[in-house]
Every structure is written in structure tokens, then in C-alpha cells.
Amino acid sequence: MLDKEGIAKRIAKEIKDGYYVNLGIGIPTLVANYIPDTMDVVLQSENGLLGMGPFPFEGEEDADTINAGKQTITKLPGSAIFDSAMSFGMIRAKKVNLTILGAMEVSENGDIANWKIPGKMVKGMGGAMDLVASADNIIVAMQHINRAGESKLLPKCSLPLTGVNCVKKIVTELAVLDVLPGGGFKLLERAPGVSVEEIIKATAGKLVVEGEIPEMDV
Amino acid sequence: MNKVVSGADEAIRDIEDGMTLMLGGFGLCGLPEKCIAALVKKGVKELTCISNNAGVDDFGIGLMLKQRQVKKMIASYVGENAEFERQLLSGELDVELIPQGTLATRCMAAGYGMPAIFTPAGIGTEVAKGKEVRNFNGKDYLMEMAFDADFAIVKAWKGDTMGNLIYRSTARNFNPVMAMAGRVTIAEVEHLVEPGELGPDYIHTPGIYVHRIFQGKDYEKRIENRTVRKKI
Image (cartoon, rainbow over all chains, first blue to last red; front, side, top):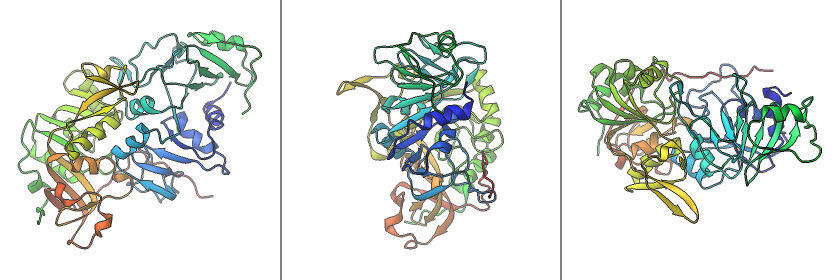
């Protein structure tokens, strides 16, 4: 089974040289730590920055320089600043190659819910609805099972949706799965020490298992 | 074309109960903190506020919420404010949550003189409820209307007396698009200079969009989420 760092490490393998990538809040933020230095990758932060660098050294924080999670960050040589309309313009126009975000639920046809639990939690969708509606390449980083012990990979989402038919790949503490164009989660890899049976048990939606499922390389 | 006013109190002098305000900033970054303080002091009520976030409990728009000055909030993300969440869940506050790109682009449309935009954000979700859907090249888009705000209040780094503005780093965020979108736009700046001191090639917001400008003193510029790394 993977921890949060493990999920981030596995997702980092999906990033290709030359990509512009938007990382969401939570586990996706950790992905930045596992992008190899040899790769030319530019991180987009939707509050208006391309070329997001690491956290500043202690004492060098700048209140004017934050990421979309409102964390103090740094800029890199070649960074560019722009306003919020242009930020979502480049997202809508598909200039950003890969979007990685968290989710509360994903359905077998690629619907995602991650912004609202009616009557309990209303934080808002932030930029997530814009990102999932426009990006061609969306990876969800999340736990397979919620705190109540229920599967988060469902036949149909029960929570208000963020977007429909948009998630392409999911990486959890148990597995890597693709969302098939016709519906269904296709099991691609198992986390170290996790059996196919455990993944079947933890997946409420339609799971497609074909042939030998390799253990992931993390 | 001198747009200079003495300070925040004069800049907001004719903001009245029931008006619609746009407030720049992302979280607490690039927030027009002097004008917010003046609005809290003035005590205007029944406001509709358009802003990406609702501040935190003791800073930003959170201060106006605490005083029950806000009737309706239009925002994209409100996760950092317990009082906001309480007023929302109890029904005291009317809240319209909209996608962040839609929020920015509805401001932009107002500033560009366009009545509406088409965006895929929110298709198939509760955001689409009651909105016109148009299909272009096989994909569905929602029609979203340009905002109409009585006042837009923004924060810039530098400005000149003619209202030309330059923002600094990610404190730019929503400020330029909101500056373009208000019927009356108020800009508060850290440095107010004479015309000619800001190079024309470096202006982010041309002064034509700005009606009032003043230099704020002692900006707090509070950090919401201080993250650092250790020197090795």
C-alpha cells in the first residue's frame, strides 16, 4: 500500500519532458517533489503564475508571491505572471498539458465530485470546474476508500459533480486505474503488497481486470 | 486627468447600502485592505460582494462578514473562513459559488464591453442550472453574463496620478480584470507617482479604467499560509 508520498511519486512518472502541469491542492502538490531535475517541466498555478518554484527559505517569504493553495512559494528564472482571466484562458485553450487534482468521488464514466458535501461542507469549486471541463489529460490523486470505509470509485457519484466524463486516470494507495472511454475502471497496476482481490473489494464501480496485473514500480 | 483622492474614506464616500462591489485579491494576496477597513468603519450594509474568496475570520472580507455587512457573496472558494461557513449553512448569507475561471472571465467581459461569455466550466453540474447551453463544434458551453458592479476596488503596487497601474507578482490575480469592470473603479496603491515615472510599456491597467486612486500607508499584507524550507 502507498502512502501520500508514494501516490505522488507514482503520478510523477506520468509527467513528460516539455509538459506544462497544473497541480491541485493536497497530494497533487507533493508531485512537484518527484519530477526529475533532468526534465523540463513548468508548473502552472492558476492564481497567475507559470514557473512555480519551491517554498522560500525561512525569512525570504513574500506575501505577494503565493500559489493557488495560498502557500508562500518562489518564482524561477523564466517565470511569468498574469491575471486570473488569462490564467483560465490558457487552461480553456488547452495549453496546459496535464492537470492533477484530488477528488472525493470518481464514477466509472469519469465524472468527478470534489467541491461540496450538501449541508456539511461548502468550500467552493475554486478553479477545479474550469480545469476538468477543459483539460484533455486529467489524473486524480486520492485515497481508494473514504474515512467511513466506503469506496470512492463508484458506479455513479453521490455528491454534487465538479465535471462529467473527464477523468482519464486515477492513482490511489492501492492501484493505478484508467477510466475506459465506454465506462469502467481498468486496473493497470497494483501498489506494492496489494492483491487484485483487495482492489476488487475496495472498488464499488465496474472494475475491468485483464490478465496479469503488474506491481507498480515506485 | 488627476484621479487622486486623499485616502480610503474619500474613495468610498458614495458607496451606499445595497450596492454591488468587486474586490480584488486572491486569498489575502493583493487585497485592497485599506478600502475594506474604510467600508467596515463606514458600516454600509446589504452589500453584494464579488471576490474570489471571503477572506479569513479576522482579515479581508471576513471583517465585513463579521459585521453582517454582506447580503450576498459571489465567490469561487471560501474554505478558510469559519464565520462565512456558519452564515452560509444557517442561511443568513446568500452565496453564489461559481468556477474561478468563470468569475475572472465575467469580469473581463464587463471590461471589454461584451455582454456574455461561453465556457465549458460547470456543464453537467448544478452550476449549469437555468443557464443557456450552446453547442460549438460538438462541445457544450454555458452562457455566462458579464458582471455589472457599482464599484470595483483593487490593489496595485504602483500607480500614477492618472490612474495607470502596475501590480506586483501574484498579487496581480483578479485585480486587473476587476479594475476594468467597475462602473466606478477605486485603486489603492503602495506607491503613488507622477505621470511619466511608470514606463508606458509596463502599464498593466491603463488609467482610463480607474476613477480614483490613493496611496495606502503601512500595508499589513498578511500571509495566509506561510510555507518555507530550511537552508541546507
